[in-house]
Amino acid sequence: MRDHDGGTWRDRLVTTVLRPSTPPVAWGIAVAAGLIALEMVIVFLLERIAPDSAFGAVFLFGVLVLSAGWGFGIAIATSIASAAAYAYVHVSENSQSLLPAVIVFTSVALLTNVLVGQSRLRAAESDQRRREADMMAAFARTMLREPMSPEMFSTASARLTEVLDLPSPYAVLGPADASVTPDQQRIDLLDEGVPAGSLLVPAVLSASDTRRVRRIVPALEALLAAARDRHELGEHTESLARQQAALRRVATLVAQRGEPDVVYPAAAAELANGLDVEHVSLVRFGDDESCVVLAAWDGGPRGHHLIVGERLPLGGHNASTLVKAAGTSVAVDYAEATGPMAERLIRRGFRFGLGVPIKIDGCTWGAIIIGAADRRPAPDVEERVTDFAELVATAVYNSETRAQLTQSRARVVAAADQARRVIERDLHDGAQQRIVSLGMELRAAQMAVPPEHQDLREQLDRSVETLSHVHTDLQELSRGIHPAILSRGGLGPALKTLSRRSPVPVSLTISIPTRLPDTVEVAAYYVVAEALMNTAKYAHATEISISAASEDGFLDLTVTDDGDGGADAGNGSGLIGLHDRIDTVGGTLTITSPQGVGTSLVARIPVSPR
Image 1 (cartoon, rainbow, N blue to C red):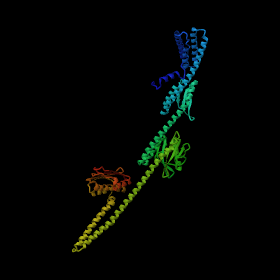
Image 2 (image 1 turned 90 degrees about the horizontal axis):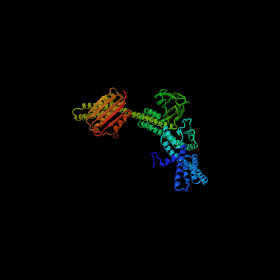
Image 3 (image 1 turned 90 degrees about the vertical axis):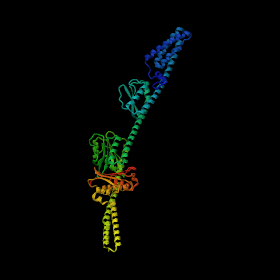
Image 4 (image 1 turned 180 degrees about the horizontal axis):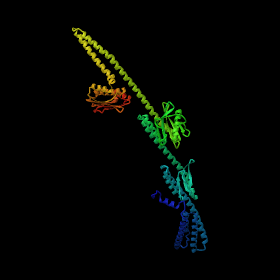
């Protein structure tokens, strides 16, 4: 049967009887006197039943109890007192055999005392070791489940005191630098020669207490070492988790095509929080032996902080200069650093620093600089900063690639637009003018034909009519290539012309107070032209609404119809071309076309008045 504390009643009884320290001597004397008196009463009662027996073995009971509970000294006294009681009883029966009987009884009592005492010591030591093993198991669970804290040391100290059964001030487990009072002594707990903790015990201990304490020290050292390793591993794992989360957040910004101006401060802030350092800055190297601050995170008070956009000259012995010169990571002791940037950081009280290069296409584009005021950074800090430097390099490379691609597409579109203008001008000034001249000549020839040649006059008239249709077709073709009205009057008049020519009724709203850049006007014109053509061909719409407004540096263009809907930008080259054209001017185009509801094209283009 187990009690509420988890032990058996037998264990509690054994622990009470075989405790490391003996009960008070006064208790032993009282117990011895009571047992001897009880033994004499029992013997007198037994003699009435068997008068011829001495019953000397009864007097050994007290010797056994005192030997087991109070140790050798009081057990000897009990043996002598029991021998005297035995002698008293024996004399009352037969005085002639008193001396041999007393000698035999005393010898047996002393031998019993020695044997029981040895058994008690061995049993006490065995029970003590069992309790120590139980305590170490519970102590191990406490140490390995809870973080190293004052609460954990307090719990462990209570268990140690209970098991070792030490006098006040008991056993106190604590850190290696725990303070010692005059009535305490400290036992250092080492981990491979390095202090890992301390055990405070009373300054004065008995030999048995000292043996128990010394016996438990190696196990305590092993457990403290394991607990410290677990604590360090937990901190390292938590730090890695924070770093991975920070890297994931910055990587998400890069993957979402975040602009470098957004990625720079995000990377600096994530690094500062993850590394727990006072300063993180991101700089870009220039061609004139200088660097520009792109982002800066400072955790200390204001003053001597680096400012975003600030240009600092390189030179001296500092992280930025060394990284640019070597193209590799560099650790710096600011006690030996020189140079303009180093002076700024030294005023902040920094002691240690690290610079990691940001490389693009094998060239050192910039660097990430960290500074710490009160400690040297962790051994793996270079690897962690390098991960962020690679993300920043990716963001910069992607941004530059996108910019180059946009510029390339813009040049292609501009060249195509210029080619259209040239073709439109050549058609207007060349082919159309010659057609008009030819028509006038044919009309003059028709007038010169005599009346009797009516068939010839009619044939010439049909030829003039055909030339008129050819002229009209060329005009329409030239307008499609590049509308002259767009160049002469701007986007507003061009949209009005498109609306008048649309076979579907158009509701037009225009708010463009000034002329816009040619690229913006051409892009907007072709968006409307393509939308009107698609609506007329496929939508079966009854009305089209067009809205164009230039405000706050943007041209907002909307074209909607009430047709069939279902337009898919991925299945038509015209809509794909519109996306490309809007992208080249830095705008966005959104097409919404639910089946049976109609189609809506919304374009937003950044502009600057011409």
